Length: 635
Image 1 (cartoon, rainbow, N blue to C red):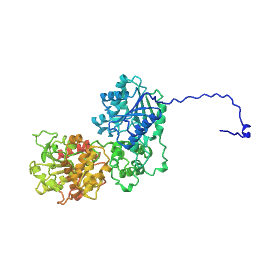
Image 2 (cartoon, rainbow, N blue to C red; image 1 turned 180 degrees about the vertical axis):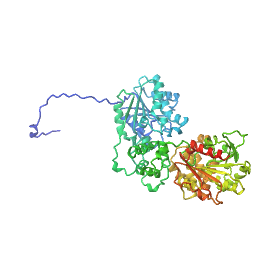
Image 3 (cartoon, rainbow, N blue to C red; image 1 turned 90 degrees about the vertical axis):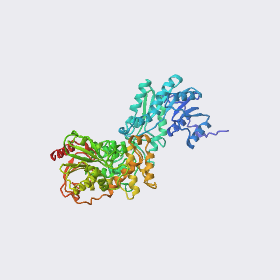
Image 4 (cartoon, rainbow, N blue to C red; image 1 turned 180 degrees about the horizontal axis):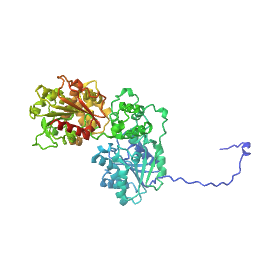
């Protein structure tokens, strides 16, 4: 080959000169072809990317630990590509949550060659707020990460003398904190493993790889997921950073990408901001009275919503409050119509997401139509009789704080469980004979109705007045108009199928966290109510069903009672008995001052506002004091 150089070019040739400069060499991670590299949870999205990176770094012996083995064509394809490079790949299905399983895994990997590095990327999430966590959910989340790391540390000390790297991957949300993942928090299992092993290992935190991994699965319609002011990091960036961090001696390292601050003029309202986080494009297509939890808000979204509302709009909530919030309430808060709403939410109890339904009715709590309840007086002393009609669940537990302090003989009225009535009037008629067994013409009595029980109380005292009895009616935060409005808000529907589905979904959300939106559509497709109940029971783990005694009959009873409220109209003569209404200071729905009791009573109801909401009013000392005062004065 000949090379021709133009003469003009020769004139521009420069003589060489000596030049010295100082450069700091960058340490990079390299694999040794003689050694084995173990990846725990090795067939997930991030795991496969890490394994591919190890191969590019020179690894020729890979052991991927996965309990489920190869399940997709993509996994098979990646392994095929690596083997074409001359890489030995072994899929181990050993149980790394036990010490024996870890020992078997290490022995299996050592057959290929000495182990140079172990990467634990296993993860099992069981998201729930701390109050809803159980020992089982903690164990489930701890096992593949904390216990596996502990056992691997013990085993590798004995069997892997040449081990250079012991790396545990985790989510940056754990280091920063997430109310929905307390069982996965770094402060729990990292300290646990450290205490047990007394050995520094490298823990790498990153904020979710884009396109692969659990965080990527949470993306909706390619919307960039932001959490705590950070966004997902591209997997290529994660691996570039890992290349550098593996050469540091720090036991805990992290990598994150800070989210760009959104311009204020791009945020039109708090409602639109929350809709963006939830992935809702058209607010007209959803009910504004549906809670964010029912719209599919998970724990990470909850944290982001709470932070955005606090930072950009001055609205202060907890994660639990955010789950119970609706777009309608959020709009009112933003407009300043409910400036005390945040204070109210702080006072909410943990007795259920829905204020109308708090418990699941069960056969064990229903024995007789009328039962004696504990009170603040001996059973052999003379005292007035108080009949208590509970909420829609027919459970007296929420009322114990009140009934235990009354200086009266308290009788609890229970609604039929095995043969639930179809109307409020039927419930009152069937219960009336059992109530009359406790009455005499010359003795005073009181009827206390709470929530659903106020409707039964109105029907019952109307029937008693027809028989010549006179008593005192005490209603706690409800009336026919108020109950109807509340149910229309919580169970908005146009067909029976929608109503049945809404009631069953409320039962489900009391027991487990779930994607209500998707399950609602599935349940709506069922042919009849019985199929919908079967689907509900299949969604709830058997252990939880047994703990709350949830069975098909409980669903039927609860549905019948809710439907009875929708169908109820007071058609009797107006009540003559003295009526007292104790209303919550923070109601579920806006209603007239007397909850429209003037429509059913000739006497003007004495209305008293008690601090609290529909649930916490029962624990209010103000309610106890006021009711006790009425009972004492009328003895």
